[in-house]
Length: 266
Image 1 (cartoon, rainbow, N blue to C red):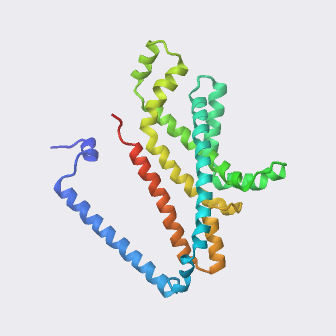
Image 2 (image 1 turned 90 degrees about the horizontal axis):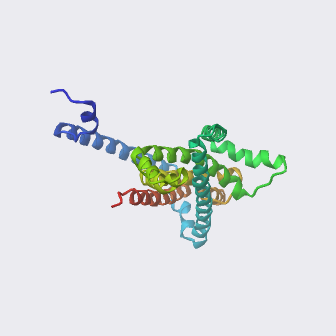
Image 3 (image 1 turned 180 degrees about the vertical axis):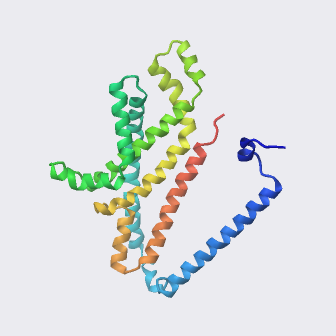
């Protein structure tokens, strides 16, 4: 009996398929474990795991310094997220507009920001703007480019959610006499958010990671402070391991929030 493509892709796997999947997963886990052991062994052989490279983590000043960098990371990423969410909505409205004078510039801005690396935008704020008399603080040199770059992606996420709302909802709202603005903000957009909340929250993970570009403008975020610790204590591997763990904790918290917000509402 032939199976359709949908059955192959989405149907529950049969016992043989589950056995193959479990075997492949076990092999992959074993390979990753061996790789991790090999990396730790190399670090140990190089002396990077010796006690002198770790002892300064017992000092409160070290954790206070890292906490200050983490707060800088969170402050920059939070503001960048606000900029992205607000500007993304503006770009969405422009892209959905029936007026070409609004639609085409919005599309151009979205495509430009999506195609331009965030690091390049940071260099523009850091090197180009001061040359024309526009001086920004290091906070805004980092936050503004991240917010602009993310806004273009958020606009496309918004649009995907709007297109996912059944057309009947729009027609029903119009039949009640609602204006186009009321239909969008009271009917379409709230439903679209239910589809895209996980994707929006996932963008926060990328925003947090992008704040590591703070070294370009010497903004005091977590990675920049980590570099200071490395320069002072020559503890490369331990510092990066601790900082990586802190980033993982932050991103794990964001992912858990995404899962909770993504649950169906009854």
